[in-house]
Length: 188
Image 1 (cartoon, rainbow, N blue to C red):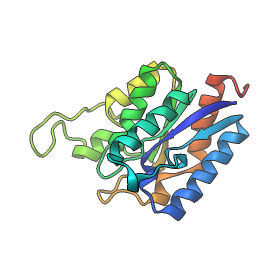
Image 2 (image 1 turned 180 degrees about the vertical axis):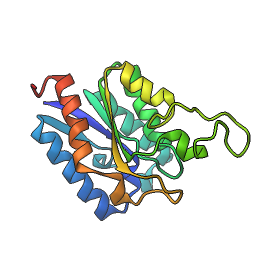
Image 3 (image 1 turned 30 degrees about the vertical axis):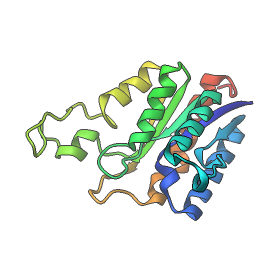
């Protein structure tokens, strides 16, 4: 069975919400003949680790090396862009040549979230005015790898999204279907 690494800020959600969302994701992946590999599945002894951060990094990297592909939650997190760790994981998997798929529950383009559509931000720095889901390196990198980036319908709010708003079953199913087709676990 092909395996998919689940990348996203979900690891920071309150445990009960995280567990519910992750159970939904795992069930959807299984329906498409895919196994989920989640950072939350790592059983790490962080209390006795000399360097807990390094231990988490190495465990997640091992999961990514094991995975056949990745689905990334690129919903804006703690600001107008996606979670930085998720962006790293997406780049890592893309560099390995593994198929990727991504989603965001946000419909508001990146440049609108950053500067309200202005060509520059409050510090006078240029803002990418392409109307993409996020930074052009993410959108274009996903597309160049043959991946899919699915957008939801929530309008951006400066206070961000609640954990529940960071998951939408419909768009996750679409992202899952795209990667399942790419991996050959599903036929059209």
